[in-house]
Amino acid sequence: MTLDKYDKRILETLQQQGRISNQELAETINLSPSPCLRRVKQLEEQGLIAGYAALLDAKKLGLSLVSFMQVSMDKHTPERFEYFEQQITKCSEVLECHLVTGQSADYLLKVIVRDMEHFQQFLLTKLTPIEGVSGVHSSFVLKSPVHTTALPV
Image (cartoon, rainbow, N blue to C red; front, side, top):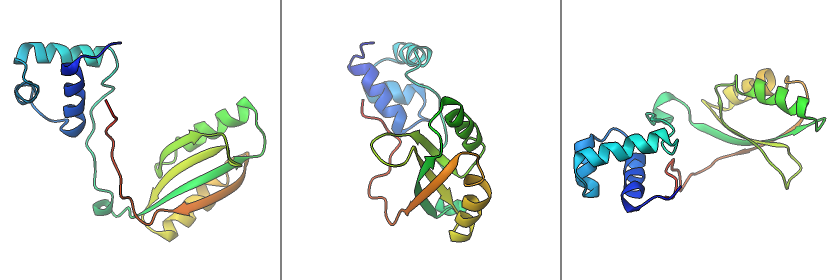
């Protein structure tokens, strides 16, 4: 798929201002409203725009502790990995789950919780009881100098 300068500007703008009106978007990218709306609809239909969401302030919701967790599995079988992935999607504390290579862990999780007590509860009652989990190593975020949801277009 080839994106022209208007498509790229639409994608960049919508990543920063998801609630922008079509009129404002058209003005921002120097295009008239009708062609702008057609382009947005086409980008949605092609799956480049996967959806729209509100970005919440985690700290104002009382979620202030972020951890990256490396999870090791006891067996490296498709069934074991599938089971783990099914179970981990049920955990609302897990923001991201990645099957990774190049380290001793099989999965890398990004987890957000209220505090250390909540973290301990998540670890002991939700993560480690999952069948197949053989080891967990946690690192805690001290500072996040870069935090974005915008993809480079």
